[in-house]
Image 1 (tube, rainbow, N blue to C red):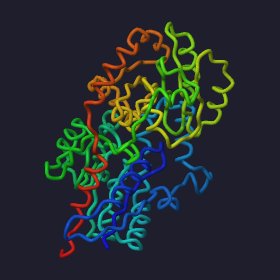
Image 2 (image 1 turned 180 degrees about the vertical axis):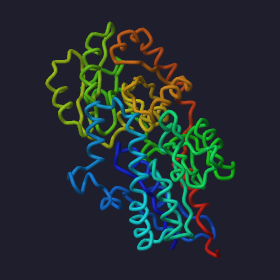
Image 3 (image 1 turned 60 degrees about the horizontal axis):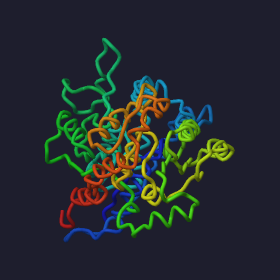
Image 4 (image 1 turned 90 degrees about the vertical axis):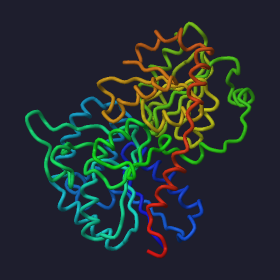
Length: 406
């Protein structure tokens, strides 16, 4: 039985969510004719490399947990400056990282390795060449575009990080360093970046979007009016869904106050994820409009279908989920936005399905553009996008597996 390994990290949540969604489709779909069913394994890169994690060994710190706490607290200033430091640490520890990965591949020999996180292409390639040279590997972007991480001024990109790339293209990036032998992209911009990295068309999958959970497909009919009444919400008022992913955000109370001062009446659903302090603060606020405050929930498709607009972060997963369900979005993009998410605001406006602010302090300026009629026009733009990426990528990965007679 061929073995497909899906590699992810828990930093941010989107990488694991994409891996789990892809695994669910790969396990449920029938293999093509002549191909045996595949065993699909989810592989947490952090756990495999934990023996090489100096922060965990000497300081007993969970680096992924620290990253998620920074997101929850909104402490994302300077994230761009941290990327070269992270990549330098990976290069410094590369021999150890490759050794632990090679040991894993020796004990769990793969036929296909799928990388759903950035920065570790060279380590994966070298470990496979050492321990499982017969295996293929591919990168599936969980961002709408790659993010160039330019070296410091006056210094060239390090030679050992770019693997087999020509010297003219030895610039470290998040996703396309190497470049990888196969890559799946969720936007035309990312496809162009893959071509520029030197990949031929036959090695690039131009998917129709980002990977979404299968729960976003084949949804039953929803009586929005009845469901809103069930949650003590007004069927006639615009409903804002305030959602910043699984870690929530300290910006949510600020948005709640802006909604209270809006010239037209609003109502809101606040999904705070694992951020219980923000949820507690919202529950203590005496908001003068109908609202619900929720913690972590897997019913995101339900609440997105119930809402008229999303207020949140420019994360690729959240924006693609909203667009897929025809929900307009309002996000902020500024110097505190993480580098890999800054392109997403451009993408949102190109689709015509949302608006971008520099700060939530500008939200009151948008009230004239957030009437139900304006939101309906953005909703129509969002509905024109058909995202079948999770099924397209799963079928593409199966084609990368060797046939039974090879």
